[in-house]
Length: 181
View: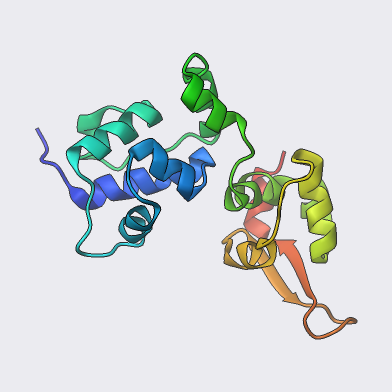
Protein backbone atom coordinates (compact mmCIF):
# COMPACT_ATOMS: atom_id res chain seq x y z
CA UNK A 1 0.00 0.00 0.00
CA UNK A 2 1.31 3.45 -0.91
CA UNK A 3 1.81 6.04 1.81
CA UNK A 4 0.02 9.37 2.08
CA UNK A 5 1.61 12.06 -0.09
CA UNK A 6 0.74 15.68 0.81
CA UNK A 7 1.90 17.04 -2.56
CA UNK A 8 -0.21 14.57 -4.56
CA UNK A 9 -3.20 15.19 -2.29
CA UNK A 10 -2.93 18.96 -2.73
CA UNK A 11 -2.57 18.58 -6.51
CA UNK A 12 -5.63 16.31 -6.67
CA UNK A 13 -7.71 18.74 -4.63
CA UNK A 14 -6.53 21.68 -6.75
CA UNK A 15 -7.28 19.89 -10.05
CA UNK A 16 -10.71 18.71 -8.92
CA UNK A 17 -11.54 22.14 -7.51
CA UNK A 18 -10.67 23.87 -10.81
CA UNK A 19 -12.84 21.46 -12.81
CA UNK A 20 -15.74 21.74 -10.34
CA UNK A 21 -16.35 25.39 -11.22
CA UNK A 22 -16.78 26.45 -7.61
CA UNK A 23 -15.50 29.79 -6.42
CA UNK A 24 -12.78 29.72 -3.78
CA UNK A 25 -15.22 31.10 -1.18
CA UNK A 26 -17.76 28.34 -1.81
CA UNK A 27 -15.11 25.61 -1.84
CA UNK A 28 -13.65 26.89 1.44
CA UNK A 29 -17.13 26.61 2.95
CA UNK A 30 -17.49 23.04 1.66
CA UNK A 31 -14.17 22.14 3.32
CA UNK A 32 -15.03 24.16 6.45
CA UNK A 33 -11.80 26.19 6.24
CA UNK A 34 -11.10 29.88 5.71
CA UNK A 35 -10.77 31.30 2.22
CA UNK A 36 -7.33 32.71 3.05
CA UNK A 37 -6.06 29.36 4.36
CA UNK A 38 -7.31 27.61 1.22
CA UNK A 39 -5.66 30.22 -1.00
CA UNK A 40 -2.34 29.68 0.82
CA UNK A 41 -2.45 25.92 0.47
CA UNK A 42 -3.51 25.97 -3.20
CA UNK A 43 -0.70 28.43 -3.90
CA UNK A 44 1.78 25.93 -2.47
CA UNK A 45 2.76 27.73 0.75
CA UNK A 46 5.14 25.41 2.61
CA UNK A 47 3.68 25.76 6.10
CA UNK A 48 0.18 24.73 5.03
CA UNK A 49 -1.22 21.30 4.27
CA UNK A 50 -4.61 19.65 4.34
CA UNK A 51 -5.72 17.92 7.53
CA UNK A 52 -7.23 14.41 7.22
CA UNK A 53 -10.71 15.71 8.09
CA UNK A 54 -10.46 18.34 5.32
CA UNK A 55 -9.22 15.76 2.82
CA UNK A 56 -12.16 13.53 3.69
CA UNK A 57 -14.56 16.47 3.14
CA UNK A 58 -12.98 17.03 -0.29
CA UNK A 59 -13.21 13.31 -1.14
CA UNK A 60 -16.87 13.25 -0.09
CA UNK A 61 -17.64 16.25 -2.28
CA UNK A 62 -15.60 15.01 -5.27
CA UNK A 63 -16.89 11.41 -4.88
CA UNK A 64 -13.32 10.16 -4.62
CA UNK A 65 -11.64 7.27 -2.82
CA UNK A 66 -9.57 8.66 0.09
CA UNK A 67 -6.71 6.16 -0.32
CA UNK A 68 -6.28 6.74 -4.05
CA UNK A 69 -6.82 10.49 -3.70
CA UNK A 70 -3.97 10.77 -1.19
CA UNK A 71 -1.48 8.47 -2.95
CA UNK A 72 -2.03 8.70 -6.74
CA UNK A 73 -2.51 11.63 -9.08
CA UNK A 74 -6.12 11.38 -10.28
CA UNK A 75 -7.47 12.29 -13.71
CA UNK A 76 -10.43 14.65 -13.57
CA UNK A 77 -13.19 13.91 -16.11
CA UNK A 78 -13.94 16.63 -18.71
CA UNK A 79 -17.58 16.91 -17.63
CA UNK A 80 -16.75 16.85 -13.93
CA UNK A 81 -19.18 19.62 -12.91
CA UNK A 82 -22.07 17.77 -14.58
CA UNK A 83 -20.97 14.53 -12.89
CA UNK A 84 -21.03 16.30 -9.50
CA UNK A 85 -24.48 17.77 -10.21
CA UNK A 86 -25.86 14.30 -10.86
CA UNK A 87 -24.16 12.68 -7.87
CA UNK A 88 -25.25 15.45 -5.47
CA UNK A 89 -28.76 15.97 -6.87
CA UNK A 90 -30.32 14.80 -3.59
CA UNK A 91 -27.98 16.78 -1.33
CA UNK A 92 -29.66 20.20 -1.09
CA UNK A 93 -26.51 22.02 0.10
CA UNK A 94 -24.25 20.71 -2.67
CA UNK A 95 -27.00 20.80 -5.28
CA UNK A 96 -27.52 24.51 -4.70
CA UNK A 97 -23.85 25.48 -5.02
CA UNK A 98 -23.51 23.37 -8.16
CA UNK A 99 -26.65 24.96 -9.64
CA UNK A 100 -25.29 28.49 -9.15
CA UNK A 101 -23.19 30.06 -11.89
CA UNK A 102 -19.64 28.65 -11.90
CA UNK A 103 -16.52 30.70 -11.27
CA UNK A 104 -15.36 33.05 -14.03
CA UNK A 105 -12.06 31.17 -14.56
CA UNK A 106 -14.09 27.98 -15.06
CA UNK A 107 -16.39 29.75 -17.55
CA UNK A 108 -13.37 31.04 -19.47
CA UNK A 109 -11.54 27.69 -19.63
CA UNK A 110 -14.47 25.31 -19.99
CA UNK A 111 -17.07 27.32 -21.92
CA UNK A 112 -15.64 30.43 -23.61
CA UNK A 113 -12.50 28.70 -24.89
CA UNK A 114 -14.75 26.07 -26.52
CA UNK A 115 -17.42 28.44 -27.86
CA UNK A 116 -17.54 28.34 -31.68
CA UNK A 117 -18.08 32.09 -32.08
CA UNK A 118 -15.11 32.87 -29.83
CA UNK A 119 -12.85 30.23 -31.43
CA UNK A 120 -13.62 31.36 -34.96
CA UNK A 121 -12.97 35.05 -34.23
CA UNK A 122 -9.69 36.79 -34.94
CA UNK A 123 -9.93 38.38 -31.53
CA UNK A 124 -12.70 40.15 -29.66
CA UNK A 125 -12.85 43.19 -27.44
CA UNK A 126 -13.92 42.67 -23.84
CA UNK A 127 -17.48 43.93 -24.45
CA UNK A 128 -18.02 41.21 -27.10
CA UNK A 129 -16.49 38.52 -24.88
CA UNK A 130 -18.97 39.55 -22.16
CA UNK A 131 -21.85 39.16 -24.62
CA UNK A 132 -20.79 35.58 -25.35
CA UNK A 133 -20.56 34.74 -21.64
CA UNK A 134 -23.93 36.38 -20.93
CA UNK A 135 -25.54 34.03 -23.46
CA UNK A 136 -24.65 31.21 -21.06
CA UNK A 137 -25.07 33.12 -17.77
CA UNK A 138 -27.22 36.24 -18.23
CA UNK A 139 -26.52 39.06 -15.79
CA UNK A 140 -23.38 37.48 -14.36
CA UNK A 141 -21.06 40.04 -12.75
CA UNK A 142 -17.85 40.12 -14.75
CA UNK A 143 -15.91 42.78 -12.86
CA UNK A 144 -12.46 41.14 -13.17
CA UNK A 145 -13.00 39.54 -16.56
CA UNK A 146 -10.03 41.20 -18.26
CA UNK A 147 -7.53 39.94 -15.67
CA UNK A 148 -9.19 36.49 -15.57
CA UNK A 149 -8.88 36.25 -19.37
CA UNK A 150 -5.23 37.27 -19.19
CA UNK A 151 -4.56 34.64 -16.50
CA UNK A 152 -6.12 31.81 -18.53
CA UNK A 153 -3.80 29.37 -20.25
CA UNK A 154 -6.43 28.93 -23.00
CA UNK A 155 -6.70 32.59 -24.02
CA UNK A 156 -4.20 34.91 -25.64
CA UNK A 157 -4.47 38.67 -25.60
CA UNK A 158 -2.88 41.60 -27.35
CA UNK A 159 -3.43 45.32 -27.67
CA UNK A 160 -6.10 46.37 -30.15
CA UNK A 161 -4.31 47.51 -33.33
CA UNK A 162 -6.74 50.35 -34.16
CA UNK A 163 -8.05 51.57 -30.82
CA UNK A 164 -6.87 53.30 -27.70
CA UNK A 165 -3.80 51.90 -25.97
CA UNK A 166 -5.67 50.23 -23.10
CA UNK A 167 -8.05 48.18 -25.25
CA UNK A 168 -7.18 44.48 -25.50
CA UNK A 169 -8.25 41.85 -27.98
CA UNK A 170 -8.86 38.30 -26.69
CA UNK A 171 -8.63 35.13 -28.73
CA UNK A 172 -8.61 31.38 -28.12
CA UNK A 173 -5.19 29.75 -28.27
CA UNK A 174 -4.80 27.24 -31.09
CA UNK A 175 -4.87 24.05 -28.98
CA UNK A 176 -8.43 24.78 -27.77
CA UNK A 177 -9.83 24.43 -31.29
CA UNK A 178 -9.19 20.68 -31.06
CA UNK A 179 -11.60 20.42 -28.13
CA UNK A 180 -14.29 22.68 -29.59
CA UNK A 181 -17.88 21.59 -29.54
